[in-house]
Length: 274
Image (cartoon, rainbow, N blue to C red):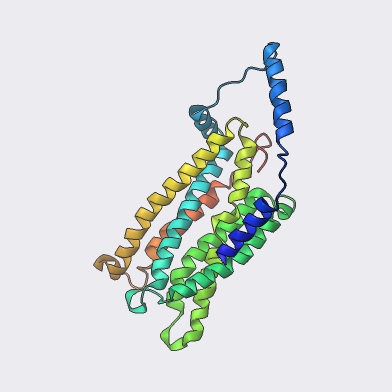
């Protein structure tokens, strides 16, 4: 399925796409005007932008700083949560897992991509026309935190005596988890960051969020994976049964809740009012 989608994307956006560069005329015209202004000594002097100026600008802007931290945290949390969720769901029932086959998880992930794509396609007509930026992000974050905690909760709700019918609750919980991932609001955050920073800073700001999200993912995976292993094997955590399995999931859900509180500050008109 994924190969078919990639093939269709290549066909429609590259093979069948227009050959004329629509930016070439505007780029050449702007470049010639800039050279003329520079020759006449009328070109405006701008402060040189770089990493230091970008970091300082982001740090001095509370709204922008909160957005970047939320972006880093939530993307890292999703990758870490996805990692331990896969371990938890695929582990045998007698080893504190759910015993769900790999093929079933792949099918659920595929089905969950359908509503995600639908939401992203409808997003421009919803935000900010009907729902403002921060309420939309907070709405996704609340469901994301609940979805993380619902994964281990299904282990306590589903009992062997309920038969195979109870496992569908776990399937629904996993589908909701995949549907409420940060990719649903990442375009919004990227837009707000690009809207707030100077055009000469955008490349640096994008680099900050990209590098930061990867570092956040690496750190949280390195913390949550060993913590999950300890929670289901260590004697210290086994004494807490049946709550031991909630430890790594609660840590990640807590970071998502922290992100919600970081966005509670009301944006000023100067910063776009988001």
